[in-house]
Length: 314
Image (cartoon, rainbow, N blue to C red; front, side):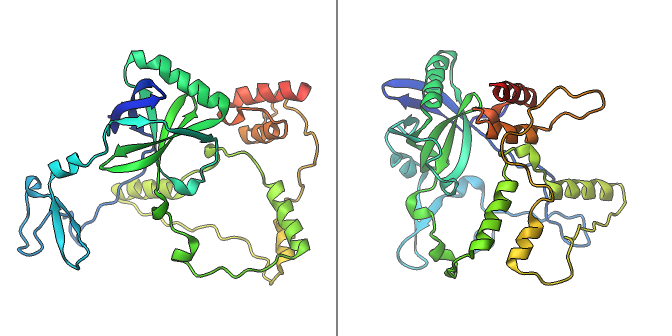
């Protein structure tokens, strides 16, 4: 169990819900440190006074902000920062509800799991979850986390509520802010048709289990091998090349699967005979999407197979 990053009250109208927020993500894999070449000496960073070069104790470090004048700063004491926190900084008020999926991924900063703070909070917590899930809505609020105020979305997800912090409008860059203009060209009718066909042929439902951190695995293998005194050489797979230049249309045709999936109703899953493999979860998700099975992304493989079989027989 990990420590909560925020403890406070979520207000659903006049209904208070005591909650705790837990970080929903964790970085995995080996952590790379810095060393001086030729030695086993770690490189560490310390707080130093840039004028004297002397190390400064943590209790003597305060924060400051630059003013409009170059190289001029004002020092901000902890109590001054505490005083300007929004009233009720330990409270999130749900001030509105927007359609599920109406906020683009670009706006999301971090996501946290929301848990009831006390047993008495479980009933209003579950009530809010059920209301959001049934109406396909997400709640909007603001909250102070990690010394700054954030817009927040409260959403139902896999049986629990989540709270996602969002960037403020003036923090989201436009393409023109960071990159040169993209030349505008009108795609050819044939090429566009082939591109759409390729997208449809490779369409599936999102399943995070379809992806793996190949670099992280190779890095962990390298660390283990070198710890035993060995070495490894990684030769990355190179994409096959036809050896000749091709046009856009021909490249798209070659990209299409050799045996594209037939349109219409695909065969329903069945109990395999001995020695025959069962359909994969990815195949079941694709079939569930064709049959418009609701809640498919949250189902296990066995639940998917049962739901697809049932829907296919309707």
